[in-house]
Amino acid sequence: MILFIAIILVVTFVWYFLDKPPLQGDWQEQLAVASTAEFNGDFVTVKNVRNFRYYPTEADMHPDYYDKAYDLTQIKKVWYVAEPFNENKIAAHTFVSFEFNNGDFLSISIEARKTKDQTYSIWKGMLHSYPLIYIVADERDVLLMRANLRKDQVYVYPVKLEKQENARLLLVDMLGKMNELTSTHPVWYNTLFANCTSSIANHINKLAPGRISIFSWQLWLTSSADELALERGLLDTDLPIEQAREKYNINAISEKVGDMENYSSEIRRGLR
Image (cartoon, rainbow, N blue to C red):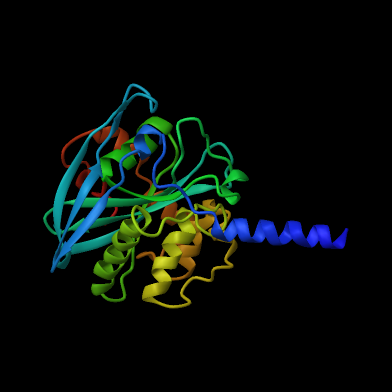
């Protein structure tokens, strides 16, 4: 009996670490096209920047993509976005946006890549159910849908940069990881250890080793991830978390301005 259990454990262990996520699949429409980045000195060209619109409901998708070159020397600011899910008050989606001096904004959202017959499950997310994917998107895509359609509370926080160069290093590292995931080194999404928030923490720890403990409970109960970021000095504010959430909530202004060309600048008028 002990030998049988040992064999089962060994087989499970080998499967877990040798099972590779697929690069091809019948993916959900908003996850179907992978972005790629091509670096050339101080410039990076991102191909397939997602720019979907969702109306009249989130399920009614109007796909669009564009390619765009970004000057890595012109990153003005980094923003940290938190979207607590209204239905459970425990989990949240988090992602980052990069602001450039010319008014461009580029968002990177780390997600579970689901097929058309899959729905997200916390438990399945621990069992090699979804590949990890980095979605590079126009900020209007990822913010309008969350604030104006889902009606989830969305917080857009300014990130405190110890060195301006860290903004470039963070973007390059994230885009490099994105390229690996879609070509040479795909990995599985994991609810605890490779989710949206813990993946961002991994990138931050590359810039500042040990800045965020991988055992922080807020990396798992992600509705408090913004509180963790504040505690670790990553948010550019001296406000306590509840006041910071009040100040950096964009729902009202997003509803007011709607889908306009300078949406990202308009929603930040009261956030600076």
